[in-house]
Image: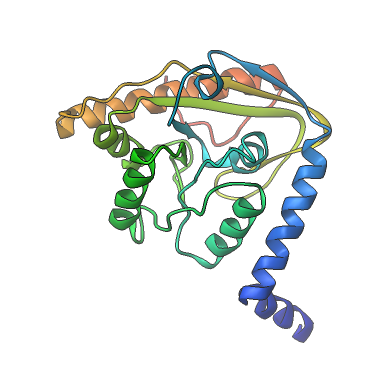
Length: 233
């Protein structure tokens, strides 16, 4: 028990978080190199000049972190202890220093920072149901970002076979070595810079519809049944 407490204390320290993040990055790079990745749909990240806004579910954080590594992209991260580890992991994978904040803490400041980054040319991806869920239901942040920057949202979904699906609230996916990984891009979702609150709500509902449709499609292609799939159409 004392040893476990010591380990938690070490990981909570700046040195421990840095070492743990670098180790996870090395492991993820190593496993990811063995994946057989299939990209489907129009990929604006490589076919159109940026910056871009990418939206995906929180469960795909590890897969996306590997697939879009070393491009100088940025991902907003919460101001939690876990967020410190995630920040270190992203930096070790070649992402730009992330703005810190979420829908539950520091969201307004993080949104302003993200808007500045987009205006300066940085592509931003957001796990739109994070940081605490409910799963597969977007918060307002991505749509607000699209309205403020005038950039369209690209929905994307990922699945894998075989993979581990953790028992966390989001059902995080980690493909096994040599797994088949499918990444599917959806059509861009436009949000007017003059959108009303009601129009933002409509855009968020459309984003959820598309993300869930894409997720169901890639899960079916990989033989995965996600118990967190929302009820309804």
